[in-house]
Length: 378
View 1 (tube, rainbow, N blue to C red):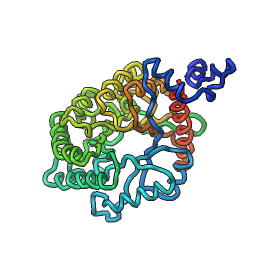
View 2: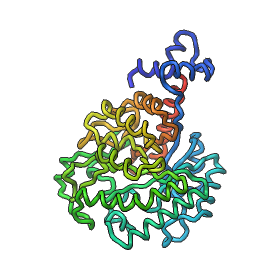
View 3: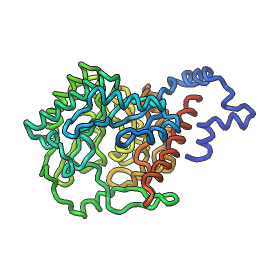
View 4: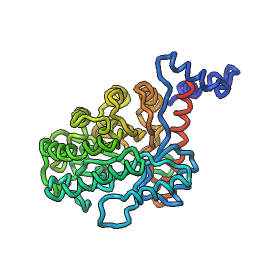
């Protein structure tokens, strides 16, 4: 963001004129936004907590004033594929003690795991009757979320996980950034997974089989199921023998139209969607509009990239990518998005992974919170 844009967004130009931006009443600020043709921004700051909640990571999260989080339930029995209502309440109680609200949880199944490392992979392998047992566990998770008052469940429909190149890109200070260059990935000549070759029609069949059994339960219990798009975009002819339709915008459009429901939509990872586009800063606004006006965006991973489809640096700070966050925030405001904006894939610090990544997330919390507050006062 250049200096002129920053001053425009933060209201610093008003301060330069002797009128502190903070002095204007909030209602007047909202009225200005409405007069400009935009509704008030309702998006809120959130975070995806990796792993189960603990006293330590709850203290860390509450330190930065997060308004809500995505968390993973602690399932005590490793053979059980769903959380009980009691386990969900224990998670909620722990979060509540630290003034955190759990609005969305990670599904215990259907995560972004490379399928050769996934113990329970029958849904994506298309193996019956095992996949019926796994889908039943997801149905139970949805029911138990409703009983505990949790409004959304996040999941993936992934076989390849999250492919990245082996080498990393030096970042700011002592950080490193992940990257994906398709030519380099193809040159690595990665072997087929245990899924073998899966063409697009077969992939759609597995998606249809799952949705036909999950969406009716989501409808009945009024719990939103939010699918994370596949990261990164891949060629239509496939990669490692897999033709995945959920790493193309038209595939995602078809996906949300299947078993149409207000409870069936996306965990809209802005970084992943950007990786599906050749010119993300130009193309992304209309993609947000397409899904946002149809109310198919249930959660946003507010992540930036440098580059575009087939060649990008992925895990960098939000203020240094090619996607203009101010521009995108205005589009989320335009479509009336009112759920969470979560930072994602913070830069890593080699040798200091946990502490370094936590520190980098803290920067991203402040950056996103500042953008939200500034946009609310324009």
